[in-house]
Image (cartoon, helix red, strand yellow):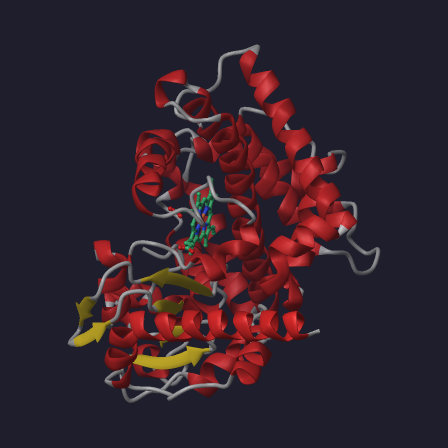
Length: 415
Ligand code: HEM
């Protein structure tokens, strides 16, 4: 019995020593944190309560509750994490362009379950992957895309027409098909029939999982214990295996994501190839689908803007003899461009993103300690009345015809 008491005492001493050393190592972080404007601290209980609320639906009230207007940044201790919230365009611009705030905070990006793919990765590995994969996004590659989008859009519109007059239907299914099939053809060199494909169900369910509050914090654990989530990832892997097989037996489109990943000269490991293919498929699917759905709903809600868009389309088609879908042809759709930008301003597909200070760094006069988590609210900046005026919440594509008050205030694609 005495031995047991000694053991407990010993463990307590070790724990205490660890905590003292941990706190001592972070003294500088605590000293600098005192000079940052914001809140002094939430208890562990409050932090957990807040963290469990960081789901898509709740972040608007959370941000407006904590983010202060009188300084470009707001400090908020989330349990052990020194966090700064920001919606300031100039501050955010500096963050995007600073090598010391390049990395993503692991704690917020763990929900992707991946360590070898772009979004959660940091440092030199991230730079290497970007340098190679950027080749898939050059204007020369983009040049060939409008024809593919057009072919896929026609298919989806025909499918949606079957629903006319038959009651409600889920718009996301149709715009999701457009996003995923286009991505498959362009970047995976693989024809996906969304409505027949196993990837359809898995993507949809995965997006549903991401909405669960508890998923955000327990993502990794859930993948191991949740049978359905494990099955979803098995389906992702099976799908990617088929994509890779089919690309081995025929030539991939040059500079497609799959071709860049499979090219032996680029030295990607098998795990990197799988994770990047799953991640880019997800990144493209979730964002394009939400953006397209939001745009269609906004147009449905604003009949006058919808009419203006129809008028533009009618006018261009009535004067154009050659309506081949090229990049040059698309440049003529000025109002459509403004509609899409305004839709991404109002509903940015990724409303909040994170970065981490890998070194102590001074930004806009604030000394940010090493290890600080920086939460950038694209949503709050896109809706800030100080930037966009009193009608910041209104759908008004025309605002993009004028020069923006601050060019850094519109960042739907982040940096
Ligand atoms: C309307 C469409 C889209 C929007 C609004 C959008 C938005 C964004 C944003 C805000 C980020 C930054 C995330 C962060 O830093 O945490 C991001 C990253 C990324 N997006 Fe998109 N995206 C769109 C479409 C796409 C498409 C079609 C693809 C693939 C073909 C794609 C691939 C990626 C990748 C790979 C990353 C990670 C980049 C990195 O970490 O370096 N996105 N996207």
